[in-house]
Length: 185
Image (cartoon, rainbow, N blue to C red; front, side):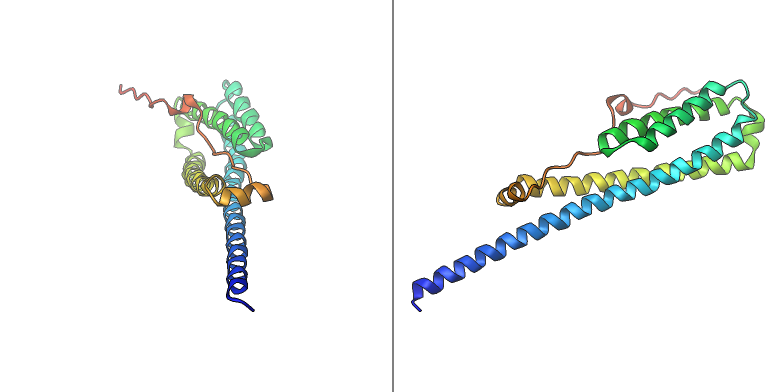
């Protein structure tokens, strides 16, 4: 065997090892994105499971506020049917708005505010909202990492060959980005 053929073999082996390494990194990154999306799903399911309990508890107190309760129920149903990050973000933000309305109206009912079960459910929902927020942040971080790998050279060549595509972020709609208005009375 000549020196030239040894060099060619070594270069080919290194090239193949590099391609395999890039491919495996892309697969691991894609799996991290999928896993982080599942973490959002887990928290959203918890949220969706808590809402009917809250609605059931407050409906006796809020007999004149049926529209608010119906809006929460409708928004929950739409959120449960949402598919993908963009659709889920839109539906979950509608649900968040409906819950804010429910909590705002609940402030007008002293008996409801004093109810320990309602307070506990509100606390659980608040805790779940925080977990959802952290899960969304993790998801967006893993999407960014994956998208960087899919879009930068030389891994973009391998990504294109094997069908890896950039993923979409879980984004907050423009109306949710506006500062919160606080009114002190």
